[in-house]
Length: 160
Image 1 (cartoon, rainbow, N blue to C red):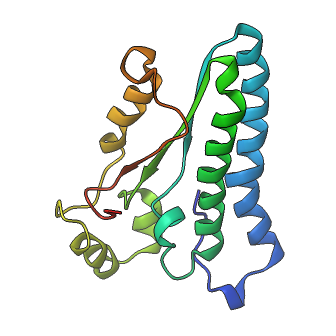
Image 2: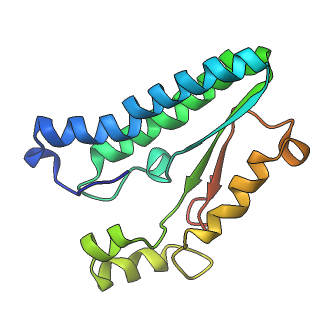
């Protein structure tokens, strides 16, 4: 969760803690609790949410957010290795620039248009663009052999 854009020179401990608490600490707690239950039933599926910022770096003012999302991706891959023996899959969905209320609040039209121009599909994503990837990963029938992956959903904005 990107709560606010602020240049690194203007960061304070409160904002750093808030970003890491929302994106890292709470993720660890949720995964820890879920893993206990899933290990007991010897099956499960965890889907975390990373970001294009984890691989590409965040936009200016988002350095801590980008680092936190890189943590999400790496933590999820490591957790997949840890839990695979218990028949538990762990993956990430990594959205690109998705038009949200945050972007309406913190990005003016010129910034959104500049982002749109970096996307080969010619538009910002919407939340519904990610839904199919979540459904795919949630289905043991469709993705039962998929674990430890970060799946990019970004309209071609990042093509590694």
